[in-house]
Length: 130
Image 1 (tube, rainbow, N blue to C red):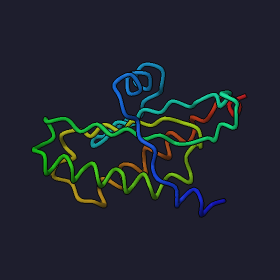
Image 2 (cartoon, rainbow, N blue to C red):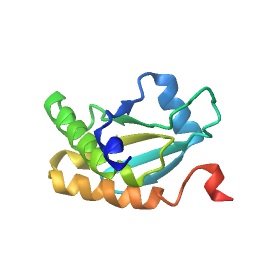
Image 3 (cartoon, one colour):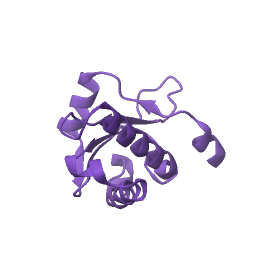
Image 4 (spheres, one colour):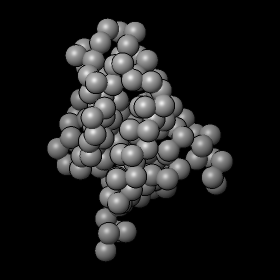
């Protein structure tokens, strides 16, 4: 099962309404480079629903030009891929890059993601909070 989690593609949030739902109903955690929003799903959709993690990445033009924004997006996606086994299985996560992330190295951004993922591990699905 562990290998299947690592091998699956990363499901992404596609439209504005999905991002807005996570922004409005989820919890946020931040540091100087990134802001992470997480919204745990209740998992009661039935009909063989398979829990999945969904990732949305937002890097605005304030961070830099297209090349810089895509570089940061790739770094965030790769760090998420390495951290996803330790995250709640049925959740939506939005990562927002701050302008200070522009000049940071791969390891700096990965460390920032790792720090925030440790913080959001305390926020789990409603069933586990009881």
